[in-house]
Amino acid sequence: MLRKNSPFKLNAENVALDFVNTLDDRFAPDGPRELLPIYADLLRFCRQSGILTQIQLGRLSALPKASQEKSLGSAIELRELLARIFYRLVEGRSPASEDRIALERWAAACARRRELRWEDGRLTWAWKALDADPDTPALLLAENALELITADPPARLHTCASGTCRWLFLDTSKNRTRRWCEMKTCGNRAKARRYSAAHRD
Image 1: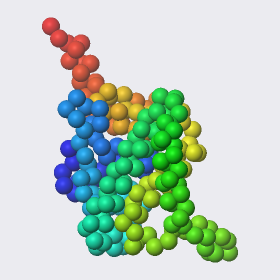
Image 2: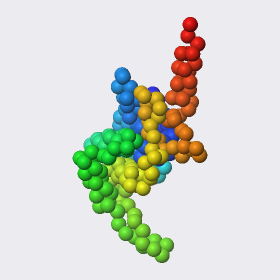
Image 3: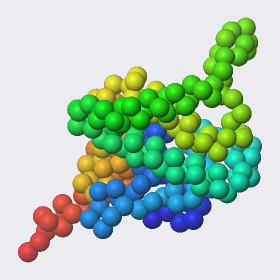
Image 4: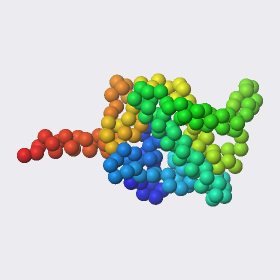
């Protein structure tokens, strides 16, 4: 389990998948572990992932606690929505219709908070007032998830081969043979179990 303020394990090759993985041991018999219990942890995750600047983090940290707590709840709802969608995609199934509709609402929320700006001789989409909106982390994560869901080949989307882990990741290995979220954790545990089984009396 992560110690307070210890770094997150970002090994999914995509920030939206790393976000889903912040509910650790999702499929463990003794239940999952929440790695984002407070809004500050959500901000820390986004900062470590590179989608928030240090200045943005500082300003969002100073927002009223009530709005932070509400936005954390929305972010967790988004995470579990994405989990349902991504795990169905791994299985080659389409998202449930209610989840597709919920994701459309997030897409609309992202669109409402962007505007066209003229920069460097061209029109480009830009976010509005990120520093003042406590929903900023969830919106940025939703945007990344939408890009992945609509553009990335589902064949690259996998889960860790450990049945109790099943962290999501994109297999970017040369031969598309990645099996584990992290070799030094789940991979080594599986090797140890196989070794133990092979050397029992």
